Image 1 (cartoon, rainbow, N blue to C red):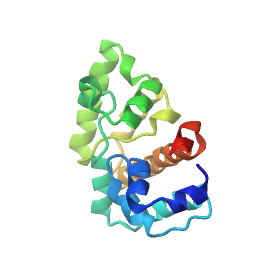
Image 2: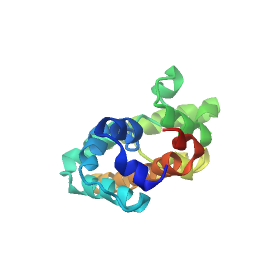
Image 3: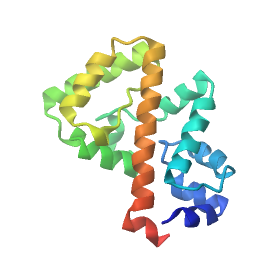
Image 4: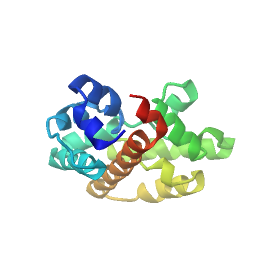
Length: 174
C-alpha cells in the first residue's frame, strides 16, 4: 500500500488497518488520522511518535501497561494479539526452557512491582538471551529512565509494524 492509499482511507479503515501499531492503543491511530495527509511512511511514523511524546507521563505509562508480559500468561493462553504472538515467537519466547520460563516470570514480576508497568522491548530486534539479559539489567534502572526506555521500545515496535503493513504484499490487498 502506498502513502496515497493510506491517505485515502476512511477513518474506520485507517483505524482498523493501523489500530494496533501501538499495542492495544487504537486511540493513538484514531487521533493521528486527522493529521493526514502524510507525505511518506516516515511522516506517518513521526505523527504517531509526536502524539506519544505529547502525552503526559501518565499517558505514556498507560501505553506501556497495554503491553503483555513477554512469555507470559497471554502467550500461554493464546490471547496475545496476532502481532505480539508473531514477534514473541520470532524472538523464541514461545520455546523457553523451563529454567528460562521461570527466570522470565520472576523477572517480569520484579519489573512490574518496581515500575508499575510491564517490561517492553522490541522482540523483533532481539533474541531470548538478549531479552532475558536486558530484563535483568533494566530492573535496576530508575522509574523515569525505564519509562523513557519503554516508550522508545514502543516506537521501535510501531516502526516495524508500520513497515510490515505498508511494505508487505499482504497490505496491498486492502
